[in-house]
Image 1 (cartoon, one colour):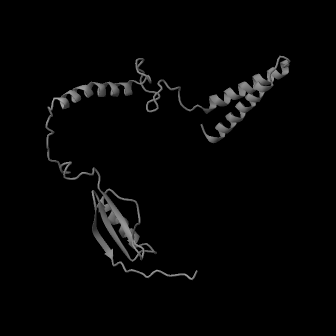
Image 2 (cartoon, helix red, strand yellow):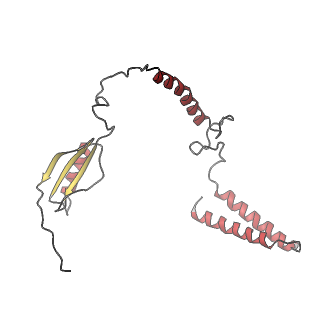
Image 3 (cartoon, helix red, strand yellow):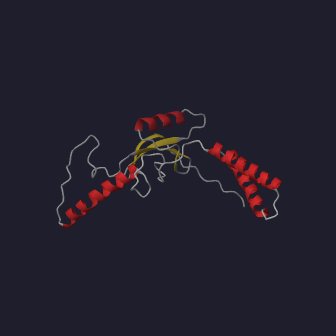
Length: 192
């Protein structure tokens, strides 16, 4: 429903509310016909507002998904996920109480082990020297090559900074490469 449709529907419903306030036992047939026309107008505006089919479930994630009559939100997909977690929950809880733990397999991968690199994603932060300190000059990148290409484009720009650097942000920050020399500019004091 777009803004114009919402505005028109709100206006039509307010008109219906005013009709409801004015209805009495002495209401004439002409006034009832006017009410009927306004109700039809509001219904037609409401019909135009719908762009999708009526939801089959009460699930906000899967409104038109498959239906499970036994589920509280009628969503088969969410209920399947809930059943799976209920099924796994007591088994894992009993295993933890008994002290029995399955060892997790340590399989080497090209990304290293999880304990070796605790963050799932590394970021490459392009920064520029503004004369006083380093500041972020673009969005963090997932690839070092993309970040270096971005800095190269910034250096070729008409208003390039005196220095740029690339920082690898993982668990901590590590400066990987610096372009140019940062020179500290004295701050200007204004007479106040």
